[in-house]
Length: 287
Image (cartoon, rainbow, N blue to C red; front, side, top):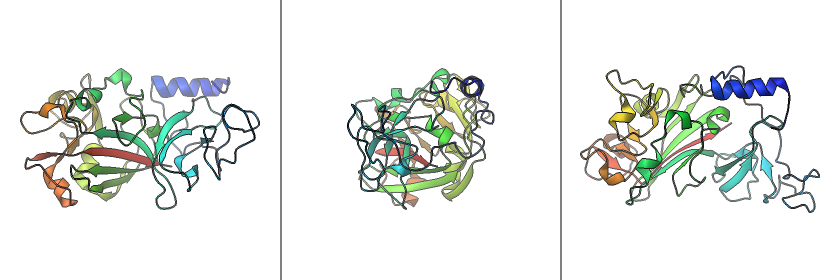
């Protein structure tokens, strides 16, 4: 821990054990350090392994730590950077995939589901309740990845889908004021743009895993009904991170699928079924 104060000990325990987002400071804009990043563990602000202090606001290096992806210099490429979400707070820095600069800012990758013929995607998303706050996979736009810690910091979100042909479309944009870590519902979700059903069923609704049912399906558990895939579910999905709604449901373990009528409305291709395979579904956030 970075601080031994009783306040931070209580806040951290409350956040992880009971989802007390208000007491943990997550009911207001996240308490991030301002300005550009600092050096790594070197007390003089130098990069990893010592050396002269790095001006992390001008040039990213291995020793740079940032408060948000938007602090990474615009000249740096998209990729994995170290973020310290709570400044002098108790949380350890995270390795986060930060996208390319866009709108004078950068977005952080919350999750990424990638289609694969080897059947690896479907089991990746069988996340049980006790693991809901545990990161999985490497931060990358090319592989399956889940970084739930970013839900605490995130205030703006966008969902992005890439079809089999490589066309990419933003399908939803929304805001939230944090997340309740007990049942994983986002706090005060508001749709900004994109498909209304997608927002209602994949963002502004409940969350379900095979062993925890908080979706809006009244007669069952959406996760259990669709190959045990964990995600935010309505009744039951517009897109799924790992299962199909056509027969067979498992679809050879391909992974992400999207309701074809929604996919084609964004100019994305389809595979001739009601729920088409897509190459990638990504959720991004910034704050």
